[in-house]
Amino acid sequence: MERVRIFGIAILALIVGSCQVKAQDTFSIVAVDTLTGEIGSAGASCVTRSTSYPHGAAILSDVIPGIGAIHTQAAWNMTNQVNAHNHMMAGESPAQIISWLVANDAQGNASTRQYGIVDFRNNQPRAAAFTGNNCSNYKNDTAAIFYAIQGNILLGQSIIDSMQNRFLSTQGTLADRLMAALQGAKVIGADTRCAPRHSSSLSSFLRVARPGNAPDSLHIDLWMAYPQGSSGLVPVDPIDSLQTLYDQWKTITSVFVTGDASIPWVKIRNNAEGNAMLDFSHCPDYFKLKLVVFDFTGRMVFTRPITSPVIQPFTGKTSNSGMYIYHVVRPDNRIVAQGKFFNF
Image (cartoon, rainbow, N blue to C red; front, top):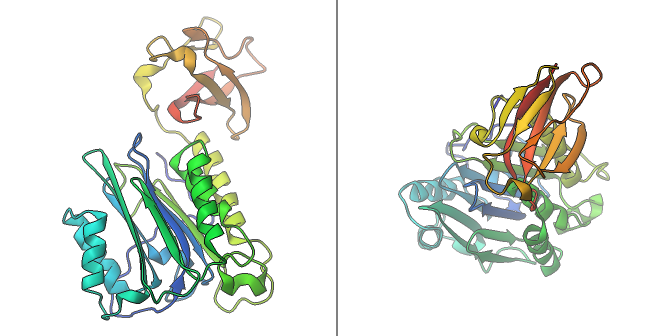
């Protein structure tokens, strides 16, 4: 996929060195999509962008395409994060990694740490979470087979519950569901330190890797963080700012598609008048799918059920000429094929 640079998209490298940063990174989620193999990471915190935290809360996130994701938070420690990464690369499960981290904390104080880890090996998801007794209240975590949610310095259990409910009840891509989970935590003082700022947080992030991504070039890598030294009420909640970045990302990537995903499913030709003809006869159960068409600006032109093996999106030769983007979408709104066609 062609890489498009917009404000707020950043490549988060795993920072190595000798400094140890002590701060409380707050609510976050790691998850896998067992259908697509995508691995995701999202979170927010009342920490700002600084030399130690170049992308704010995103410093806690380590996403390894095709393998898993690790969140090391609460009293964040870089050595613990590197150790967790190395143990995941060695093939250990999330539960094994956490057990090792607790027994071998870099500063001998695992009670102040919080972890959320998920992996996806051999098409099997695994997840685990840990909250130390001395993390700042309110603190808790929850984990199922394909996700883990954790938080500290929270307004209360309602923050974790709302994130979990939004994640599980939202349809769409993994990124859609992670973003919905963050929206579930968009409450003034969700991180209680941010209550005087009338905000949930001061920084937020959303990161999703597809199986073939390079570690430094994820499918989605978005962050928003107010700069260190900013004061007063927050003009826009960082979760809403991140939502705007994500919505822009979806619009841009829906237009700048290079090649066709699942192209054997969709055959495209033009008739004698130059009108595009989309052939879905090779799509399994095509009649259960719908066609969504966008113009070059990313504006949705129409959506309709696929009720016949061949669809001609437009008739006429002039008013609808140009390039269009199509998505073939399942009933649960997941994209199973996408690409572009030209109407001449």
